[in-house]
Amino acid sequence: AQTVTQSQPEMSVQEAETVTLSCTYDTSENNYYLFWYKQPPSRQMILVIRQEAYKQQNATENRFSVNFQKAAKSFSLKISDSQLGDTAMYFCALRLQGAQKLVFGQGTRLTINP
Amino acid sequence: GAVVSQHPSRVICKSGTSVKIECRSLDFQATTMFWYRQFPKQSLMLMATSNEGSKATYEQGVEKDKFLINHASLTLSTLTVTSAHPEDSSFYICSAPTPGSHNTEAFFGQGTRLTVV
Image (cartoon, rainbow over all chains, first blue to last red; front, side, top):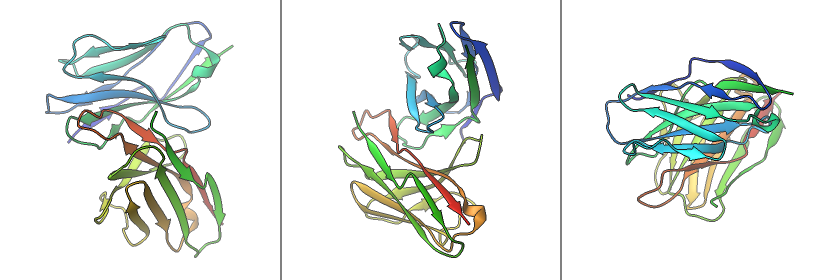
């Protein structure tokens, strides 16, 4: 069975700072996808970034980047130049290749302070 | 991009009544949809997998007679909370994976806040 763990229930930083959210996972499979989803106060789930496990290069989307360490089964999210609109719950998720089911972590509540 | 529409966004019902929540894929066909329940400040808990043309697959501990799922077409899945009780009050979210052999993404509905009084 797959598990995803986010060990930081809450984080808070000042606007424009850089923040890193941690995520570890466990699977015996070799081929999978990792995701970070954002859930703002509207509660709409929004995909932030995704990483294919077979790719060594870390994914980047504008201010969002990941540090993917496959051997350590770690997948952290770095938000640079944080903005007030980044305030949200962030969920790390894992999906096996060939499967459709997502396994979510517990979430990290991120607050960006002005 | 692919869009999943969920309706209603909010519903208040009386104890003992049934409530139906709809989840539609607007610009793609979804043979599979997922239904989640989310308690305040917690993660998404998968309730069941909705399969077009066949019975839904329920996660352990989820009452299938309580939470009826019907995947009527390739673009519509419904979740009916039967004989609702206050403890069924929660936020329910549906999602559908994008089609294709290389699909990697799931799209989520806007969610439904159910309050049972």
